[in-house]
Image 1 (cartoon, rainbow, N blue to C red):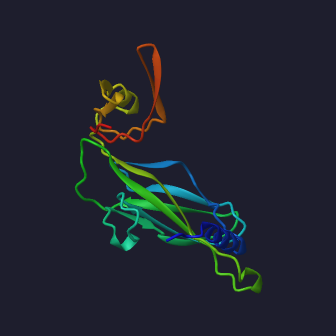
Image 2 (cartoon, rainbow, N blue to C red; image 1 turned 135 degrees about the vertical axis):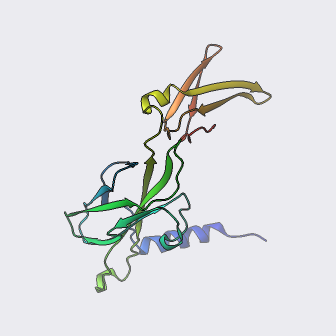
Length: 209
């Protein structure tokens, strides 16, 4: 059976041409990650509305299961206020409070701080053919135990690189021997007068990638 893809492309272009999309986040989060040191009563995160309209904003934490709803996630933290309205050119500070529980003491624990911004409903006739989208942003939220050895500078010195060779060529592994989560954009290694660029993701405590 032959399928006419030209007709499908035309339909998709026509469909999306009728509905202008709003895909830019208006809420700006203060920072790219949040660190919660053990012993603090709470940490704060500031949100600013840089858009042109008021927004309803919901915040919550997840433990990596990003497709679950907030009420399905079990995290030892509460956020106040969890839902708030932020007007144009205004901000809101939310507090994250640790509720207690057993978390590892020899390594950091990683969660994700979620911000969902929902635009107000527009009942005007001019908005009849506009598709409004809720925009979600996630940043790292790290609980850091007091008993963690060293600091980030010393943690970088505990990263070990190894390489080998098989039928497909060279392969590389990197091991994080510290209790910290480490992020590196990329690494370059010289082997046999050749330079290899390696893309690395976040390294888990005591993990190998």
